[in-house]
Figure: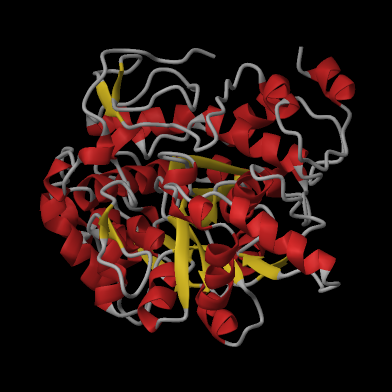
Length: 474
């Protein structure tokens, strides 16, 4: 696995909204072609490239978060239709619903957590069902928000730590220690799903300060749209969730966002488009048509002049169902951490196409697997590279991108944590400008050496011995 290298470019930290790259947009001239196909023949429609679709009517699931946008925009702006697909978007109540409906075929595919295809394929927390992804929906998009009361306690306990940016969990560790000394029960935090990036980010942030997230606090699962109500009702003291549910708590004046996932790990993977392996093999042309539509939608969305229209569309009741002003905050390059503070520039909080964001990096899959191992979710030794290779499918992505004439990486993996600023991916069909990839604690991740990475974590709850893993990962 090779890390691509190239000339450094301007770092994203200083980008303005105008700095969004104008990646090739999608023409909608072919969108009307589908309407010319007689209704009786639409089950055997042809994609724009001339390939016969095995299935044209599809149902794709979403959770009401801003990063459901690629699927929503592909439908609303005609990209699915352009490639012969008649897509129904189904808003689901929870990630468990998404997992189960895709598993049994009630949904053809869905907006999924990056770790969900891996967990489904390995049978982590659910019935085993081979699941694949050939499309990454976005980078970044999450935050860690706490109640005003907890924030004030952290500020009083360690004002110096709270003044640092990015905000560490050092002050929280001191608050936890004080509660233990007073005989109080552990505080309750929430995340959206056990195999979510939110769970791993919250744990990563806490553990970096020496907090054991399995013993020092209580972690529970709450669906994203219910986070704010549970914080307001004092059922939890904080959570890690995607937008707009951090900004919603901030605007309501009931919480403060401490840190975004961009600050924890610059340009980290967030959601993917997932389908059953069985479905992908039965409907390969349909699958490729969906990937084409999603690539074009992501290109269109990352154009700055289109972001306000994206906000208007996804804010609607059928999708995110949140005020446009709240959704707009993070989607247009700024982020508000507290109600009484001005928004801060954060142009890379939502990245949908830039930085090869849509490419399903197998190195991202390997990182997720290390976290499942770290926290004891995987209980038997596995061949990490083989698992990542079977689930993350850049080969399918490349077929779609090549037919579109889009630029794509020619390698499957890259290191993380090695670029403090912008850089250029040269292992691609044309050079691709990339963003920073730093971890806030200074660690680096080499996908060719996942066991060495695991050894670097003093706080963990691994259930698989490293020597047992080494036998399968030499």
